[in-house]
Length: 76
Image 1: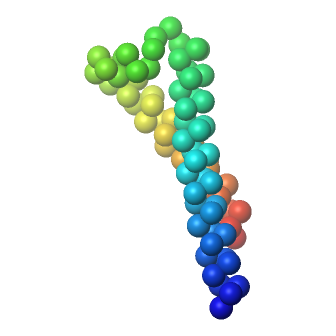
Image 2: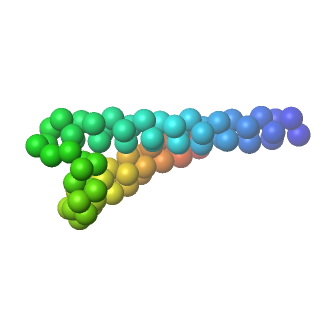
């Protein structure tokens, strides 16, 4: 019984750490793209630029899939 609870707690902590890592990596990647490109992501999103919105969406999906695979394979 105690082993099952510790396994559930460990998986819950993995999820929390993975979520925080995802947010940090998305922030870093958006900052990297802001430095690399000649436009500001938040300004362009405010103007309704769909291309920048799709780029940010790709960042979210890419980082989310990568971290999801790492965390999922680590739990196996």
